[in-house]
Image (cartoon, rainbow, N blue to C red):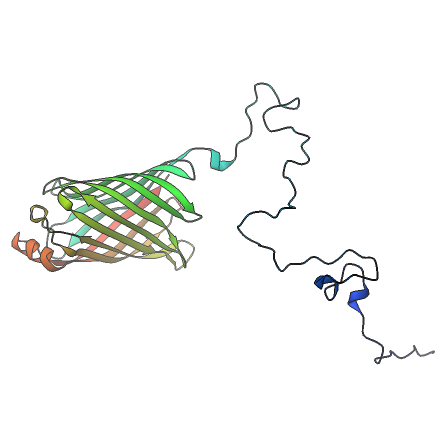
Length: 296
């Protein structure tokens, strides 16, 4: 059998600069190529995301011969033009919490927390409602009518009014805030309020969904309320008034409906704690909850 010639490992290394289209060396620096190939593309000044297009960018309508969508000799009479999803209006309702709470010390209550949205992706009307009902009476209610505008892929700014009803005096506020999905999938809702008589308030809510399985989800949730001045008629003191933190374990029968059980801790602070105790209520309590969340 004839042996194949041995490979010459001492051969001169391949010159990539001499190959057409592979000039990453001198050609990339602007040097002329002896092979006649086109100079290599310079990636140094390219912006891969955001910014204005370069001066030599291709005209997106350069191949349409002047025709536009919905008009011209190729358009069909009586047929509406195509629409993208961000040009359509949508409506949805999400009930985050509809639950019954059993307090170790205090009254049992039914709690609701919902949000409705009507409009397009970038601009839409947002309605938020949250409250407690105990012994057939509305003890604490917050309703917000907001105009939302998308400022990023996962964030909306919101501007509108807030209306408070309940056992105390009704209050009205101007509202401005942000709502969205923070890095690592934390859902954030932060809103500042301005009321009559120089009243100010700040509300922060955060939650996180921890998927134990594809259907079993553990959700930690917290809410904090701050006020600029005391409001004795509603048992509210200045500074950090109250906060709550809880854990809810839900089972998603489908993505649209999920019953859950959980526990929640509530506490009042500072001047608010004194006003709550003076009214004969407890400043701190633990509540066991069971309910359902759904959306459509």
